[in-house]
Length: 340
Image (cartoon, rainbow, N blue to C red; front, side, top):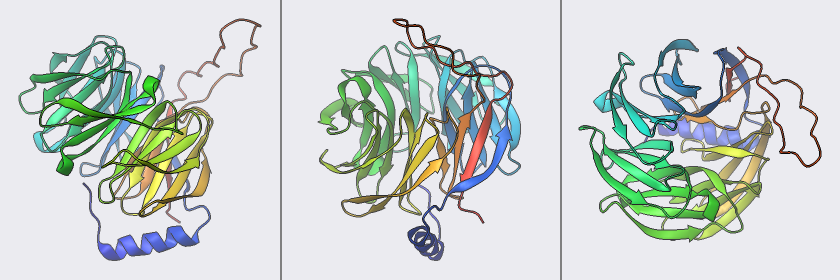
């Protein structure tokens, strides 16, 4: 999808091979406001970062590393997909079972499209110019034509979907079914599921990333494993340990690094050595709650949202586990990179 010059590619690969810990904290971008967050998306060409936050999407200018605007009226937003050539953004509004279609220049909502129940993960598939909204409680995918804004298909998935990736050349979309510990393989031409691949020894995968060139998927699994899977056959070819509470995953084709961000305040960084070797090169210490992430393949920076929290409340015996409350106004984006 994104390309850089070969000399840069080589030099970065060498730097990674020689460094024990290539990534470090560069800065924090304060955002503020109340409410939770979920997925975030980088638009490299536009130098923008889109971050779901409460009932809106915060837009960050990556040239200035500051908030530049927001997309409002997105109740229960989980994520945003962007189609830059169409100047369109698409948000998954979980609380109203709709996708908002947004003008990326003005950040104004143009229309809303009905989906299945609780649209969660969402992404733009460039091969067919379509947007996939994965409906958590609906256990389905709503497919929207990005140009017309019309629903073209609803695909039953047979499980609770999480994040997804695509291989446009192979006409495939790969979606994690978290409750089934499977990857659902979708044919983008027929809008049908063609395979369900078991991810064992991984369990309950959330984040997913893809190396299209070498046909590898990287799955962030709830049992503290990153699974590397062959995207042509579904065969698990390697695993490495990761932290607790994984949600986000990413792969950088320029450095051959795969990432798994975890809520326990760690991000595992592993190097892919084709065809079947996966080696942890760094366990990056982040902050508690930094469980989702986005990668800019041009700058190789990664962005993780989190906030400050009150102390852990005392847990009463036999009661559901209580999470610490977020301190209002402390929401921020952590920026990590290899810059010196």
